[in-house]
Image 1 (cartoon, rainbow, N blue to C red):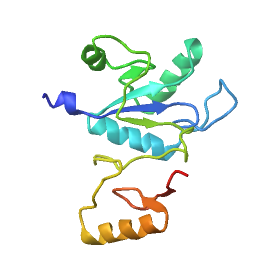
Image 2 (cartoon, rainbow, N blue to C red):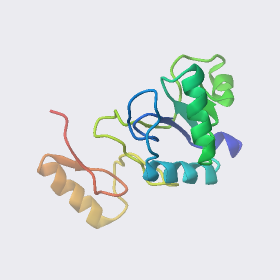
Image 3 (tube, rainbow, N blue to C red):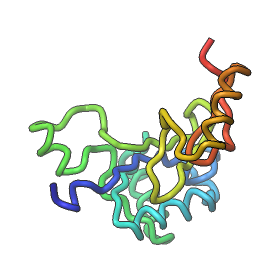
Image 4 (tube, helix red, strand yellow):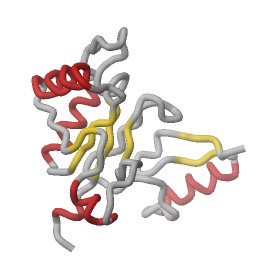
Length: 155
């Protein structure tokens, strides 16, 4: 497998995630932590897709707004060419390893940059495993690798 094929793909919403929500179609102020996160994605040569409901002139304004800040999506509201080739078609649903949106349950979550993210079945250190066992007994689980974000078990 080529190194290019192993790059992560991020899909990132525009209004409310990259730009603060405002009176549509006006573009709000940049959300700095998300902009910095996109810079990290670009510096790692990972790919990112802009997902937005904007079209026509409103989309053009958003693209100019992004370019003024040095943000260049690899695709807009569409799958990357390599994923279209992989699927042998262009499915309607955009494929991404990570989807970042202000309407996610719990709001915008930016996974640690450059690391594997998601819940692990087993923590690498004994202290972490003990903490996870204790959390499970208390009816909560701990997000890895940072363990700062706690979510109740689905009930």
